[in-house]
Structures are given as structure tokens and as C-alpha cells.
Image (cartoon, rainbow, N blue to C red):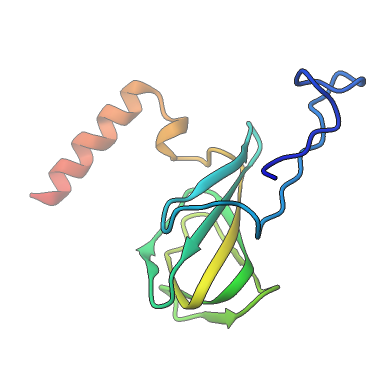
Length: 143
């Protein structure tokens, strides 16, 4: 079951969005293709499978991120040399723009919570003019 709602038609009796729920281990995911469970103006929840030995190369995201291990084992390392490793139940919090990488020590399923969504500087939060400037700036940096 992907999602169970307490009401039909998109809004509950209170006029708010209904409660949503997922069973993280029963989701049918494709390897290395993140699935967005929920996204709104405040946050985004994403689930991702990584096979043993696979990882997310060093990168940064614009939002504060929480990585929660639902299955398997991972190791997270930051550019500052910090490391956290563990299995089911491990929770890792990363600051916005903190460079990090993730490596699966065993087949792993991760829940990632991102807030605020989109974060400051995220392409989704930029105007067309800001995106154009960012592309031009990036092209100059490559030269």
C-alpha cells in the first residue's frame, strides 16, 4: 500500500489536507531512483534504495537534511571529516550546504527529509533571471 488517506477527495472535514501514511519497506522502488513521498511548501520526503557498495558521491543540497535508515546499512561522511555509520534506526542530520557523501555498506533503503523546501539557492526556488545568472556564472567557473 502506497498511501492510506483518512478521507476522500483531497481535504478532510477540517478543511486541511488529510493525514498520509506509507509503509517504507513495502514501497516498490527502482534502484537509485528516488521516489518523492510528499512535497509541499515546507518540506519534502524522499525514499531511496542503494545497493551494497553504491553511494551518492560527494555533493551538497540546499536544505537541512535528515537521513533515516529504514533497511540495510550506510556510512555518511562530510567534507569536514565527520563520519556516521549504522543500520536500521540510524538518523543523520546535515546542515544546509554541508558537503557529504553516502555509501551503502549493505543493501539500504533511506528516508530523506528536506526542509525548508525548496531551500535557499535551490534551482526550484530561483526566478528565471536568477537561474540564467547561475548558469552563466557556472560556465565562467569551468573555463
